[in-house]
Amino acid sequence: MSGLDNFSFGRCGFERICAILVAVALAVLIQAPQASAQNPGQARELVIGTKVAPPFAMKAKDGTWHGISIDLWRHIADQIHLRYRFQETTLNGLIDGVADHSLDAAVAAVTVTGSRQRVVDFTEPFYSTGLGITVGADVRMSWWPIIRNVFSLSFLRAALVLFVAALSVGVVLWIVEHRHNEHFGAHRHGFGATVWWAASAMTQIGGAAAGGKAPRTLPGRLIAMAWMITSVIVFASLTAALTSQYTLKHLRGPVNGKADLQYARVGAIAGTETIEYLGREHITYQAFANAEEGLLALHKNQIDALVYDRPLLLYLVNERFRGSLRVLEATFDPQTYAIALPQNSELRTQINLALLDAIRSDWWRETLSEYLGPESFGPGSG
Image (cartoon, rainbow, N blue to C red; front, side, top):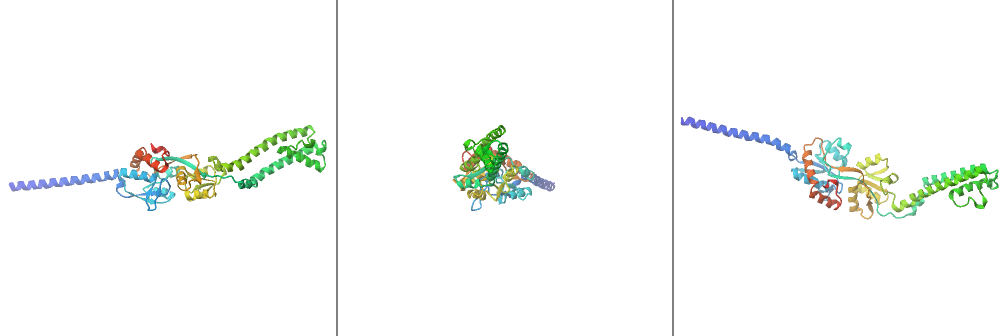
């Protein structure tokens, strides 16, 4: 019996060991998918698309990346333990890459728009801004633009309108007066005197009553009164408009706010939200490949203003065009930056939670202060 008991005991012990091993294996198999679901980014190296967009994404000479958006992504990845590598592309490449899942995320200065929201998902916004305008910092008085405008088509049109108006009044006045006024008689000198009187009354040079030359009939005097009153208003308005357009404009610069863009040579960056805004506002623009190219054209006076995201303009002007260009105070067409993710991304919830914690921390305020200055905080700074 002792041998049989030993055999039974050995068999039971073996069965127990097998049962324990099976249970451990099942536990591992059950926990593995759960761990993968909790941290899907740990299973593989994520490909994060980016592009140069100072100060949000900048590439050093050694190929490393830094900037507001880049630092934020690194902070989030550290918090939720993601493995990743950066891949540089264009702005359109960022959206297209995320949409077709060749990129796991897009991190730069990516503006949230309706058209992009239709093909990708966005995280919670981490920075709110708007469009800004860059102009020349030192606008010197130059007589050449004024001389050029005097001989412009618009100026010649205005002069022609005034000439035709004075001639028309002179003809009507001559028809009424030539039989009753020796100064405005039927001879050719009388006709010339009538037209000259009308022009003198319009320009207020005092020739209207010179030498007693004035209408004598009641209809003629009524026409003269109406013409003098009208000419005072028209001529004064025209003088004020020309003075404002041709002198003050060149003292202050052609662009001092959003309203001036309609009448200026405007530059914009191709493929950006700025193009859509200018199109909606029916503002003619010249497209440039990047902000540096546009700012250089502005510096060379090839355009009057460059419209682009204001924080990017502030950074570039401060870094490369300080003293020669300036960014106006006005901000318009509000927009927000966020991280673009593929639709229905498993990482979206985790990234959002880490992002919301980050932008309400002291770390975020210090990061913004480092890149934009101590007073340049977006609403996401907490």
